[in-house]
Amino acid sequence: MLDDDIYEGRLRELLRDPGWSLSPWPDAQARIRRSARRQRVAVTGLATCTGAAAAAAIALPLALSGGGSQAAPGTVPAAAGHGTATPSAQRHTTSVLMPDVTGLDLKKAELVILSVTTHGHITILHIKATQTAGVVVHQVPAPGATVASDGQVTLTVPSSG
Amino acid sequence: MAEPEAGRKSFEEFAAGSLPALLRFGHVLTGSPQEAEDLVQEALAKSLRRWRKVRADDPVAYVRRVMVNTHLTRWRRWGSRVRLGDVPEAAADDTLLARSQDWDTLRRALAQLPPRQRAVLVLRYLEDVPDEAIAAILGCRPVTVRSQASRGLTALRPLLAAQTARTGTGGNTHA
Image 1 (spheres, rainbow over the protein chains, first blue to last red):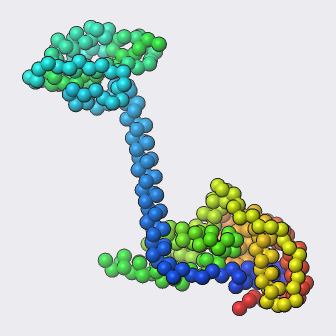
Image 2: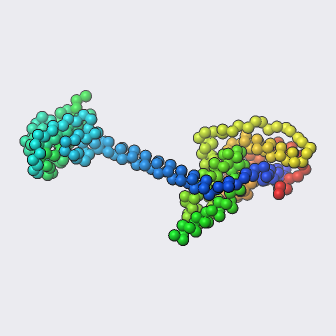
C-alpha cells in the first residue's frame, strides 16, 4: 500500500515533467477558427448527402410503382426506364375526367384513355409483381380526377417474368 | 451584437489560457506532439462551435472529454500509428540527463499501454480528475476506472520502482 502511494507519486511527478510541454501556437485563434470552419463544412456535407440519399430512397420506389408526381407533358420520367410515350399531334387543350382503367387489359386501358384524352401521353411502367401480367394495377391521375386532354397518364402494369 | 462579441472574447480568453495545459494533456495522452496538436485543435474547434452551451458548463472538462473520446475513436479506427521501442534500462549520473531519460522512459512505457488504460492514468494522475468523472468521460463504471488504473500502475511498476530506487524520492513534482 505504501509502495502504491510512492509509485503513484512518482507517476504524478513524471507526468508533470516539463518534457511534456509543447509551445502554444502563435496563431491559435486563426487555427481554431479554420478548423471549426472545416468541421462545419464536413457536417453540412454529411447532412446534404444524408438528405439526398433519404430523398432518393423515398422517391425511387414511388417512381417505380407509378405513384410519383405527374410529369410535364411530352416528357418521360427519368425513373420510368421501361416506359413508352405516345406523343400528341395537336396542342388544343380541354379538361376531361379521368376514367378508371385499373383492372383492365393494357390495350383496352389505352383505348379507353385515348378515347377521352385524345391528345394525351401515356407512359407505361412495367413492374415485376405477382399480379396478372398485362393488367393495369395503378394509374396516375387517379380515376375521377380532372386532367388536361393533352396531359400525362401513367399506367403501371406487371410484366411477365 | 454584444452577445456574440462577448462570446468570442470569452472563447479567445479561454483558448489562450488553457492552451498550454491542453497541449500537455494531449501530448501525455497520445505520446506524440503532432497528434496532440491535432487533437487540441479539433477539440477547441468543436467547443467553439458549441461555445454558448460549453461555456455555461465546464469548458476545460468538455474539451478534455472531446480529446479523450476523439483519441480513443481514432485509435480504434486506425490503431496506434506510433510504435515506440522497448523500455531501455539506461541509467545516468547526471541529474538533468537522468530526468530527461526518466521522462523518455515513461513516454515509451505509456506507449505500450492500451489507450483506455493510458487515458485513465493521465486523467487520474496528471489532471487529478476523480474516478467518477473519469468514468463519465469514458462511458464506464468507476470500478472499471479503478481496475484500469490498477492494471496501468502494475504495468508501470518495474519502471517506477527502478526510478524511485535511483532517485530516492516519491512525490515531489518538478517546478
